[in-house]
Length: 206
Image 1 (cartoon, rainbow, N blue to C red):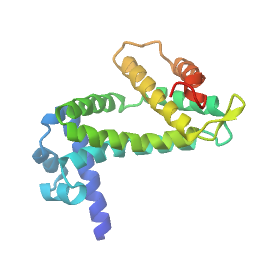
Image 2 (cartoon, rainbow, N blue to C red):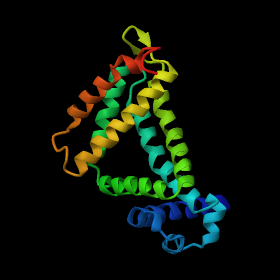
Image 3 (cartoon, helix red, strand yellow):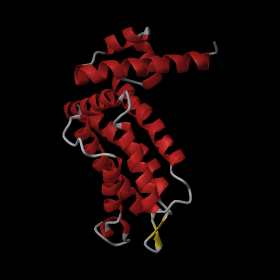
């Protein structure tokens, strides 16, 4: 095995172990348990991620990155804004039925708790989430809508609003608070949000 392959194997092992421990223990997660589960040492964490916080931030990117890549592949390049938003909404709702939906929700809530206990980590997590969200904004930018074209600024505002909408709805679905929120519900809510002039008009509501 090459050095690069060993490094990637160790990186993967630490991310998988961190997901298990952080999802369960939150800010109380012990680095020692993470490395023990991964079969490595704390030195590997500092070598690969710089710190425990660096590992947690990488964990977020590890889970969000592939998700946004799936969305980019799912939405047709020729779709207008509402068609793109509709496809995104339906994809997000299907994720609520995935086998790892509850562990992902647990991680999501845990990370919020960690951010509240560690402002520095919270700032790093926010930066990581915004970086991933920029992929979604890029997916919407340039698409036709209401006789115009969505600007990068408008696309960013919409991406932020949609993420907030879907996070809340998906939590409701998984916690039994929004049992009737099926794919069509997600899509309809997303389309209504995307049609709001304050998000798609150049000078509106910004």
